[in-house]
Image (cartoon, rainbow, N blue to C red):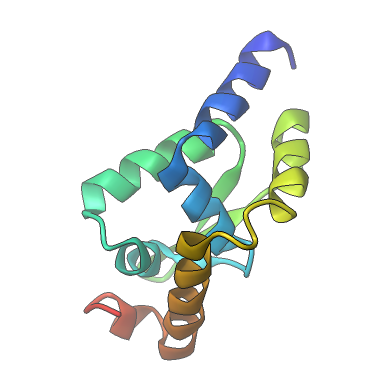
Length: 119
């Protein structure tokens, strides 16, 4: 893992929307439709952000029947693991992150099928 891996992780984690996604996933895996509902963004926009996070080794996907779930990963790339461990302690008092966490709790409570219709 060299400079390119380092750059990939830092660029992925530098975007506010991608940081919001990572902070949402701190609570555990979540269906992509739930992430879309929490962020109130379009599917293509969220998919692009998820692609970049996956490419940097910060998340991975798991297919469960018709749902794709997304979760943190700390085992793929060394810089990704370090970034995720550091991020866990950052932004806890940010109002946007706090609101996302509230919506994430609701999304996990109602489940993917109902989250897809909006939170």
